Length: 268
View 1: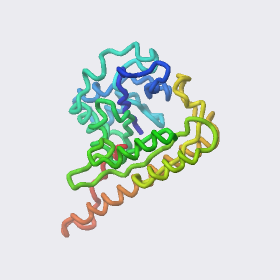
View 2: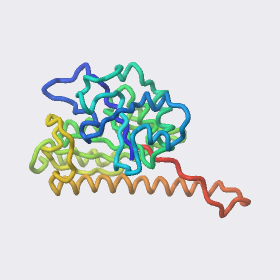
View 3: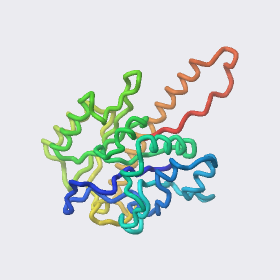
View 4: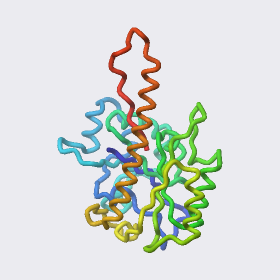
């Protein structure tokens, strides 16, 4: 699996006391030497060459990450070669995704919804996973955005269909949800395909600025994220089944029984 980190290099309105989180590379302990711009500008070499450029070897890791800018894993952002927002255009992101989806079985794009490239990423997504804090205000704002036909959380294709939407609701503190939080979560659940509750986990606090070690997470946290992963995979399997059915429906009688074209890589 490959992840594309679309977090901007800077946030004009970011509060230093409430950071929006670290880039993905240092969180998972990967160097992130190859950027989205590098992939977009690449010509030739095929999928094998692209995987080799990004760093995949014979012992393939479970996850590779392509960030917007270089240097996030080791310098905390000080090693950026060029500002990401000045170099990666929507067209470049589409070009990079075109290559990445031919080289990896699953592409995950991690983007804040208000990031400059978020609209392009969402339009390219086959499935959307929205992360919301388990607070009444946050849950209601997410529900409002999902109800708005013009909202970027609801990209619509040419046939008027939107991708499935899964919401991961993360508890900001230990303890049970308040009645107001449960009521807000219920309102949100009416506008999404699935809602998965994630308990509070201090090891995932972005202020720790340390790589996430999955085995060190509490069992309840691991189970919740496993449930989220299963929910995503099940949704992708359903989408693949629908795509396969459409492919079979358009097969000419002369080619019936032949092997259908390989399904494209899903983008989340």
